[in-house]
Length: 142
Image (cartoon, rainbow, N blue to C red):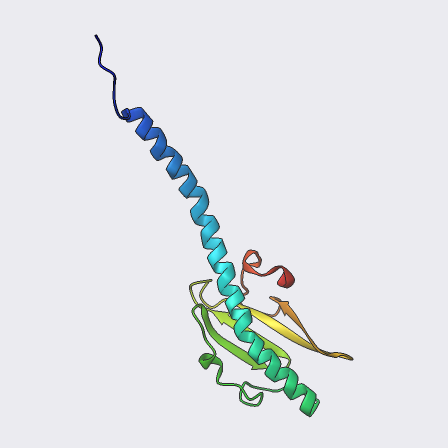
């Protein structure tokens, strides 16, 4: 009588390893894009305090602040986070710069515009020396 084989054969194990490799090759880049998008969102969240300060400054003075200090904010490099190196106010613009967790030195800008209902903000990469890749931007910035 023949005895029954127990366990996996080498070919079965190689197929399982190949399938895991294919899944990892798909999942890892998708996860990296996801984390970079979350870091860009972190930068826009850090900029929300600057948006409020610039809006208040404009409402009180009828002009845009020239610097972080004139808007009543900490220095640009003091407003930083896990992936954010600085948040800089310059007139109606707020520039958010990122470190290598997104792409070192890249940035995104928020442009304030005076409207009858108050100040409105537009997220953009035009005018930024080294803009963040558009695939990492939230949908309202594309």
